[in-house]
Length: 249
Image (tube, rainbow, N blue to C red):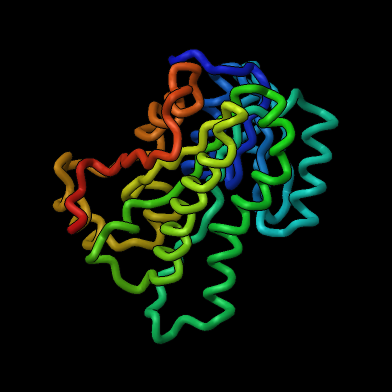
């Protein structure tokens, strides 16, 4: 396990299940207090963290809603050490043809996938600056560079915008020794993906990878641990693909 930079609080959005839950548990195991924000109850994740001797809180709210984020921030700052790691993991990925995508659908994806990162980063920016070595990790996706993806125009656009957001923040916040990076997974076998994506499509995806096995959430933990570690202080504005060497063009 790489040594972390803080022993302070790590905020993880979308931590009720899947990748967010795995990230929250891994960061707790490395010594961080964990603050989780999700529309769903994160008590299962919190129970696992506390069972292993960790400390955390679970807050039910919308990461794209300013009032919910503000209330979450207040609880975190009242009950936990200062935030020094922020993992913007919350996201949705509907499969809808562009011709059938309503403006409301479009805005919903942008709110959840992009606005949430904006709101959470602003909410905890003072803590991140005060830490002297804050770490922000945004979850983008390999689909941004994949010319074979169909029926995901809103999702792909939101994840591409998140890369731009990451680079802009890295430039602006570097003076405070805050690093801002992206992890770009391919398909990860979370419960949501296994429920929504057919076996046939998963097999087609696997065949396009150099590594002939699909990722599970645990396969991304080492990337996260590196990006929040003390040894990654010179790594910023980067996109780290964790996709089995998928051929994207």
